Length: 354
Image 1: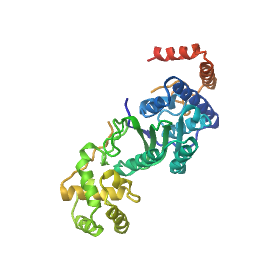
Image 2: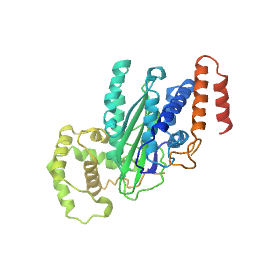
Image 3: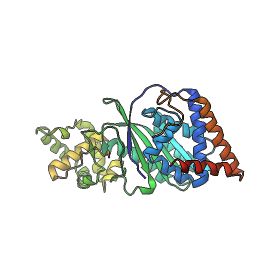
Image 4: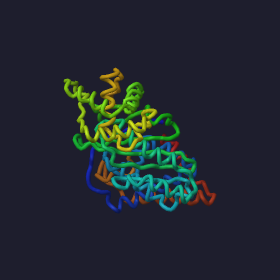
């Protein structure tokens, strides 16, 4: 299974209502079909694969290379299964912009209603966003965060960042089953159209010593750290070390870390107020004081069935799209009634095209 990052050019505008309604219905049918055959955890596994995710967006008719594929597909799946979550044992929280900030509240509401322990899910949602915004500084600001989880406590994350300077968006995938450490190689592989030249990757395996030293420095008195930064500012540093220091803001954050004395990088990252500037300053000090050099390498390492919204590779054929929905919905309905011949036929058709 390949999981990681996919880049897409930023596109503006919105999905036409007629297409979004069809995406909801077809997406619902696909999710129901997978859940019926393999269970909710298989849905997480597939959504965490950027290639399968991209293919699903294309299948549903969205622009194959658009940043909007991520936000629209996640929105269509969330709306498509609304009201069926308990039956599926699967919930989709979060979304784009301000909606993404409500993800912890959505998860908590599900926990209260279903009697599920969700503390670790809320933590995973927050930490995955913090890692991709602060620990992996690749120039993409997270603006979309979708958190999908099951009744068994398994989860996956699909989130997207924006780089307004280059006109690209980058998508990040997480999967709980194969996540061993939030701050060391959380993305097992990366897919990207664009490789960035200047990246601070504090979650690379090569950054282990820098993570340790940064956590140790964060427990020092703020004035000591600021004194070291003042000395560094007088030096002529190579370009990859460029960091804008707002001393008063940094002093407030360092006071928090000094009081908390984080036991490791993950705990440091979880402290409220610790953002990209704090992590970058500590990484810089780690390298110049202790020689603990972080990684500066970018961790970057389809399919059309109904056409695309933008007319590529051809305009969407609404009649064909509606027929696909009808066939899938009928197969799922009959399978639930115990008549699985049509569902088995669809499975064999899928095997034929592998």
